[in-house]
Amino acid sequence: MFEKERKKIDQIDKQLVKLIAKRIKIVKRIQRSKQLNHISLRNPQREKEIISIALKDAKKLGIPAKNLKKIFQELFKISKSR
Image (tube, rainbow, N blue to C red; front, side, top):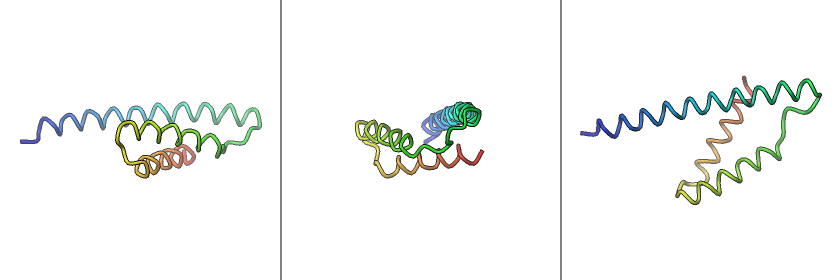
């Protein structure tokens, strides 16, 4: 009964995983560059900017802000832990 919709969700989930992996690779390149140039890896201001942009986009799409903020905070944690 719900099989078609579940398959759509599965495809979206696969895309999300690929995008997260791509994001992590880019973050790692930035981290290496920062290390080579003796720049602090942590940039709280940049994290705030990213969340602010995401929340504006979320509002336009009707996504609850606090949920999206938590997702991005988890992405930041994942990026730092690798």
